Length: 141
Image (cartoon, rainbow, N blue to C red; front, side, top):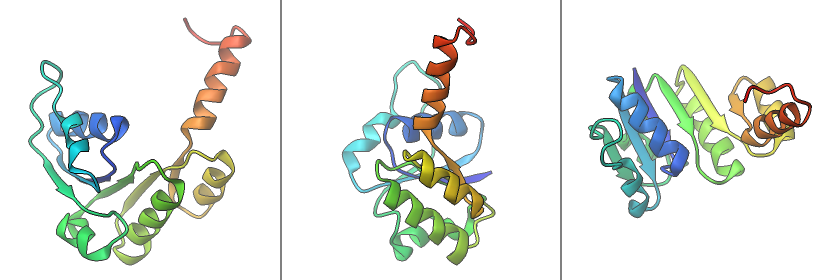
């Protein structure tokens, strides 16, 4: 699978490492070259063999350089909901990437974008559900 990840924070870097270790072609795009240090975790997983590029995930020329036209999956994991939404819409509607997944912190926005066909995940909602289950004694320990 050819995967393009926008955002090399903790989640983006860890996901890139996991997918790379499983043999997928992974490209990570971030506006800050320093963030790519997260792709190196000595002793954990294998050495990252994918591609890391500096650039903006909402710029079409940058996305082309990152290989979006060959991507099977596009994942937006920046810190900003608006950036993630915009990048996901560009990937889905302009470049016709078959599978688009977007992190949205705001649960209300997440539901809206899920209904519009973008695979939107809200860590806020997921964590709140886990906490509620833990409080109610329904969570596994």
